Length: 389
Image: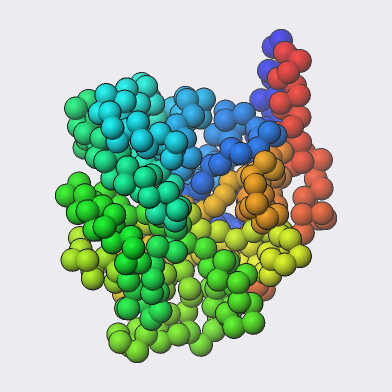
């Protein structure tokens, strides 16, 4: 048994070293400033204890989950990694109608892990306002308030904030950014939610994907504009501010929409953004080169503490989607190909955040250093060793 443990422990650090070598120095330094979405809709993902080593090797210290997986939270204890955990949409009704249910959830999924694991935010529901379920929409804010109340009752109200993640399609207008406005049919849900955020000091979370805009209209949407590549930019005629990328324009459109509802006291954070490395034939732009350019250029800007044109002194706060390709996600092929890594620990592409003269900045997943035998066995071999111990 001792030999097995030793072999496994020696293999993983070597593979991690190769992993870091395929990510530029600029990206590794930037990694402390961006977060990563750790989705688990797959049947081939590595053990959370191995994921801990991967993220630590890359200096990623912010992780967002779509649940409150105790295995993950336990694995990351005493690592200093900051977590956003989630209450699923399926739990909103019970939370909204029973304060006891909310307190039980917090007692089970939060309290046992603090302070060893740094849980700093709970998202209640995901993209609820984009659904057609008005009942779920009506339950969203009461559920958020119930979770917040449970945190306060358990003495955790100052450590953990409560929010919800929203698709940017809740905007009726996003161009120009200064004219950003929420959809009228959602105003009855958003206005009191903004009041809640203002009262509790919690962030407003958005899932923003310029990829979707390019995919829908590749003939009219500038690819350099959505990839953070050099381009003339787009000027907002109302503010004279110039935007050289779509993500920042989307963020500022949300700030404008909140201001129209009387709130300038709430921070906007990007809970999801990313670009797929593969898609169906009708999914324009879903390539390894574009994914590497989008994420690499974004990471470079985050490393610079860059803000948006409207709020230049407020660094953009982003969680990249996603850590792994997830082979069981439904929908088009792109949904299963947003990962920075394959489940075996090898990178889908190498990111070059240093220059934009090489927009791809990648080595394809089928060649070069990605075929390194140590690298490709980063998780799979150590897992096999463990299974024999």
